[in-house]
Amino acid sequence: MRRMMLLFIMAILVSCGDESIPKPKAYLSLDYPVQEYNILGIERPYVFEIGQNTSIKELPKKWLKVMYPELKASVDITYRPVNNNLRELFIEAEKLVLEHTVKADNISWRDFSNTEHKVYGKLCHIEGNAASQVQFHATDSARHFIKGSLFFYAKPNYDSIYPAVEYIKKDMVRMMESMKWKD
Image 1 (cartoon, rainbow, N blue to C red):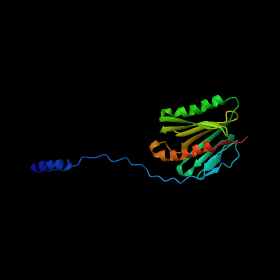
Image 2: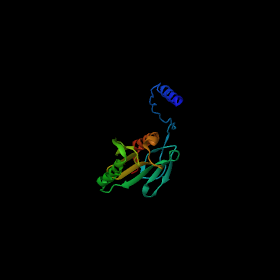
Image 3: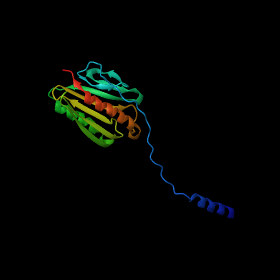
């Protein structure tokens, strides 16, 4: 019994030396290739630049899917002609963003305007475990309306996909900046 008590006291004294310090946060070190861009080479009423590491899947209604196979993600592009329904198209686009508020930690908007090519729109960044982290819409206010939404083919875990979101978001900004309407 005495030996047990002595071992117990020794264990307490030995374990009470250094204070435990929390480990610093670790961040993933992911290297993405420097993106080079090409003009979208399919027949649509719009054109913009896309990354070379993407592939395009053509869809009906002049829609398309810009796919990032290595990141298991895509930017889904929907096109709608404007026929005295611009207000409804804006409401629908913003409603799709606001549906993510349940899972979102923060939603930030950035206005976009290119008067030379008559492209006006918004880019939306959704932080948190939402189904889509980046969305944009653009229009010429008269004939064309386009919407782009980023989706990953996995359950969203924002901390894990954040570097990929930022990488693709740069491409989506480039899409908006290089967008032109074919009239």
